[in-house]
Structures are given as structure tokens and as C-alpha cells.
Image (cartoon, rainbow, N blue to C red; front, side, top):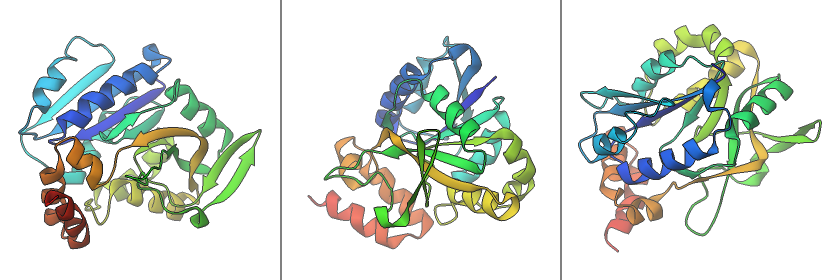
Length: 245
């Protein structure tokens, strides 16, 4: 198995169905890939969406009885069989073609990077959760460019061999919205393995983050609940502004 795509989902079925449709279409080598979806105790129509994939050999579904938060990633990563593991947020709604081969190429080229993400579409409604350009420095090898800097986990790849070297640190970490799985991985890869993280400059996905798209797809209350549980009041305030419009 070359590539494992892992998705953790909870009560965002409208995003999820679009994400899965786009993700499956973007994978070139389906014989050497897998998609593992963990339903983190959803109470909406997520189980109905996932039932459509019961006979799809590419997709494996793991259902949990309650929401374990981001700590569920610890189990999810352990299910992955691929040489490379790709975290996919369920609100990523489009991907470049041959996504698996893109990550294979960049991970082989940039051997001093442990965590590499796609770039994101930015428009008047979302920045894709990506910081502003001054946070990045370009690094080019063989015509391929990585933006070295803050790297989110919206659609990001790491090697299973690197993960094995730090898995114990992940196992004992308390992952949450303040200490997220992507941020923890980036920090630990850098600290323990001296490996960098960055964004593929010219390969772009659409990460529908932020309150505008949450409202458009009917997930606004879900996002407010998530941020309230995490104690992130500034995000609660931003999302509640849209709730009143």
C-alpha cells in the first residue's frame, strides 16, 4: 500500500459527501491507495452518506459510538497501511488530479520535509486557514516549489516511517483544537527529527473553512458547538455573527 487517506468526521455530512466524491475522483492509483473514514459519533446524516461506500473497495469506514475529539486521530493513524499517510479534512471540497502521485513526488523530492500540505484557494469568503504570505519562504528543487512555513492539516502528507519514530509522543499527547493533530505533528517532527513542514506552492485544494461556508452548508451550529467545547471564544464570536444574519 502506497498511500492512506484518513478522514475524521463528525456531523458535517454535507461537506463529507462532497469531499469523498472529489477525493475518490482525484486518486490515480486506486490499487495502491486506501481511504479510511472514522465517524466520530455523528448524530446527523453522516451514517447514511457512508453507507453508499459499503461496496467500494477503496473505502473503509470505522464508526465510533461517541465523539472522542481530535484524540481519535491516534487510532485513525494506526489503521493506515500506506507508506504515506494523508490527513484530509472533511471540509476540503476539491483536489488536484492525481493527488496520490503529487504527494509521492514531493515527499520523494523534499526529503528534509516531514509534513507537506496542498496550497489552498483563497477568496472573499475564506483564506483556507492559511496564514498570510510573509510567513513563508520558497524552496525549489528540480522545478518543484515548497513554501516553507506554517502548515495546516487540511490536506497534508507525512511518511509512516517518520511517524513511527514519534508515535509515542502522539500517544501521550492530548489533542484538541488548541493542540491540534497537525500542529502537534509539525512541532514534533521538527523537534525530534529536525524535519521541516511546508506547502506545495502550485497544487491547490479548496478548503471551505470559516463561517461563511459553514452557514451555506448548514453546519454553523456544529462549528459554534465545537469551538465552545474547546474554549475558543474568539471563534465562537465570529461564527455567531453569521448566525444572526
